[in-house]
Length: 502
Image (cartoon, rainbow, N blue to C red; front, top):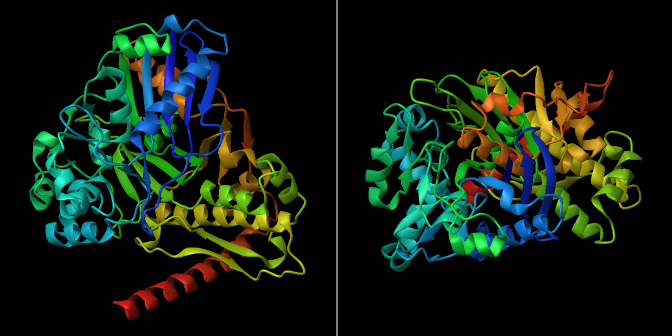
């Protein structure tokens, strides 16, 4: 039995087809070939077109079909993973009303801060496990305040994965996990947050039908099936945000287990059996894929906005004739520390782990007579690794102390320099697996239709490709302390400038 997984990322849509019997991926593809653009109508804003996402998903599926390694008619269920925290608005005819406001958009930060104060910090943290910040609910409040004409035509609000499922099936559904990532869910009441809905003046009818995460979210429309050479009426049986899904794809399901990913953004994601929250809301807790009433499984998430996007920017600045592989090779030639060059990778909007400050990216100690391509790439990747260490220390403050971290061999973990810097900086070993978000989504669909009896069964035969352990006498601990001092000085400067401007 075959399952198809769709992973809607910021840079592209990836699709995989998995053989349920073996758990092995038999075909993969992605679209577009070059990274998709993020639209920034104003500084700090970030938008993408949902209709382009849909086109990319269709193109990726057709490209996967064209490999000839499987019969598309044998696909029995579809799973979806998606970039978290985005806002898609559709009218009663399921037409998109505006571009999606995506995860790294910072326009709603102050709206969220006011809600945090008005609802009450303790109540927000104990019931929502987060401050409203610039998450989906605050983004919707921004539309209500600044684009009332568009707001008046909203029939349903959707997360990005809800939108793709709607295009496949014609149905609008959501999950507890999705509502929690949008900061619409009250964990104490185990229901839609009345505090959030009342404070922002939202009508509950805007929320799609609530469904279990592993269940049918509608059946494939005949017209879509014909376009994609699939069988009509097969179910979309799984939907999860990219980070819960990444953890699921790495069999991170039980309390204390931890996953990491280093894509456009960087994430450390651990599972807890408690309703935990950080008092400063620098890390976030959401309902994990296996969260149930009476069986608490929350995902504790540390996000770094400026991760792979910094690596991508570096490649663009150095020159498109360089592949990521060639840049990694250049970085490998340079000793740890990049001859005194340090980089702060925070150039992709407000960073939650820095108390929602927009610090920006910075180069320190750049010497035109010393530093070349390899130094620049290595310093960027080390700076990202140090940002992970900084975030992991916040998680440690909140009781998450991993002895091993699981990651897919993808994105920045393809770089030996980054992977070893990550391990040496955090002092935690990493197990690398041959998996990704689209494979996880496909396996999730298998759970959703009952092919696997439970989520753990989907990973019964999966083994790590490699384990990376901390180096002896690594200089990364002292290098991290120097990097941290530069970061703290920059955060202080940012705070002082903001104070003057206010």
